[in-house]
Length: 110
Image (tube, rainbow, N blue to C red; front, side, top):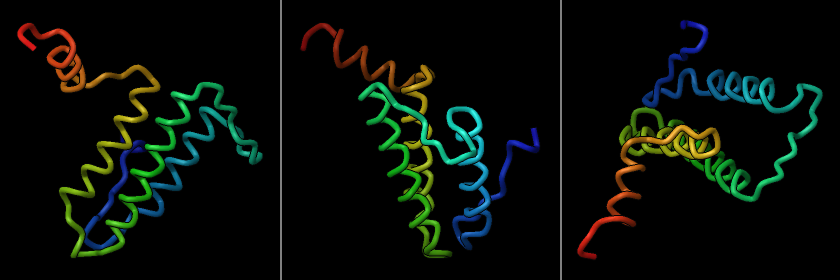
């Protein structure tokens, strides 16, 4: 849906601030309160994944601020990392992650 899409330019930095602002509002709406109360995170695993997500988004923001000098592959990787970290909390598992676990833990001949 259009209300869930943002135009973001890693080349110019245009749209980054509104994207991060809207993302923050959505997360606060789902898991916290707009009154400024921080959500309570009771599981250490969730905290680690959220911290990694925040780090990846911060790195993305720094990369995007470089304008046309932004390495697009690195900027995209930071967004992928942020999404992956959230997916580890919500239960959304990427096929590549699943294959990594299968081949790492279950392959014969190791």
